Image 1 (cartoon, rainbow, N blue to C red):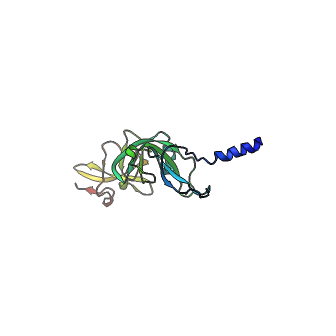
Image 2 (image 1 turned 135 degrees about the horizontal axis):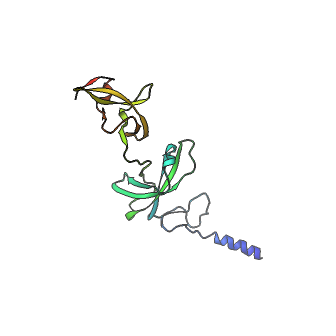
Image 3 (image 1 turned 45 degrees about the vertical axis):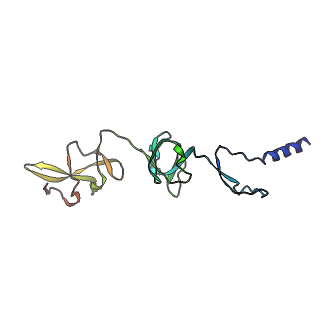
Length: 204
């Protein structure tokens, strides 16, 4: 009888549904008298105070992205809204299809403007360096010797184009850091760089 009472008490406790967090009931999916099914949602609860944004990051950034890194969250729906937060979680598995890992950023939802499933853009910093030489990525060219840029060198009263071979560092779509090959003061050709050739006389 004690065993039966224990089973009945367990069954009774399962008739009460408790939410794991506080929030607002946004939708009710079941009616009074309807049989509950574990595969069917009963209610939808929303907590708009504390939310998170989730994003997929290319695996080559894995060494540079860490929990606690500062990020900026932007929302296309609210162009003037920018939220600063930190990475709270980082995935440990690379998705074999997309070759990405996920990050999660928790943030406070000011005035509850942000709604679940909205699109967001997350700006994060994968690399930081000071006192470096960098060039526009589009002016870099490559031949059998390696990567190079054209610089203007003065010879007498005229300037001539010359290749300078360089070693590349970190890059983004706009700029590339040069670790070797260029010096402060070099006159790098950024306009008409694809129209000059070695030892060509330049006009300004």
